[in-house]
Length: 287
Image (cartoon, rainbow, N blue to C red):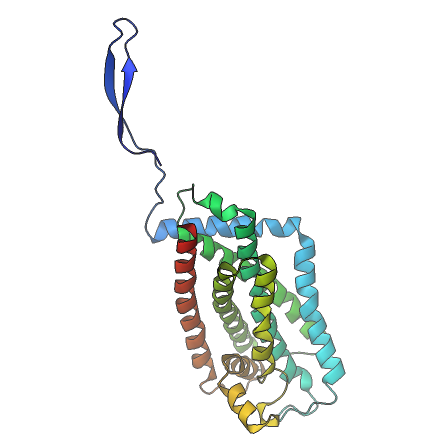
């Protein structure tokens, strides 16, 4: 960084040295919410431009949830009886699969950040006048957009196999928005994981290993009443169960009860807490 300084210039005729002041180069990051939002969007666009050049990544990220939909619906659909959904396991199942997919999709945030750290991209950011929080915000925004694309494809497949917005389009879209908001909150958890591990491989493992028990010990695929007593207690307080129950009720026109606002509180709380932790971790990493 260049600071205010006095340098000398030589007069060609007399050989005398004249002092003059040099203005500082503008390498300090702009401050304020507007600049942070601009920097965040710039970073998000950088990541989104990669998608058309790496269609395989988006394709495989979309194929996995589609396989979950088809396998669970046609393999287990005839064997699992959900109260209130007898003979219509698809309407019970798909909200859970949607929830699992958007949460699993958040893992790309941690993997992407670990990749940037490993390749030295973050080191190059140290020379730029950019808001440090914008690097993480841009990453989470771009992954949110990618998650939305994957979710839309899944929704289309769901409609093709018989899933419907039984509660109407307004409630259905509210359910979709709630699930995507929850996925954005989990992106910040994954951001902290990606900044905390030392390799891309570790980010991949650490990002997924805890999500499997969280999504399966829930009401996503079976009613929690079918579980042993102690496990049912764990499943019922699981935030993933709460958001699944809220979206399932909205999709199917059932009473939502307290699940919707509790899910919203969980999403906002997770975002605030883990965004703060991730930004602090990132600041220390740059330091």
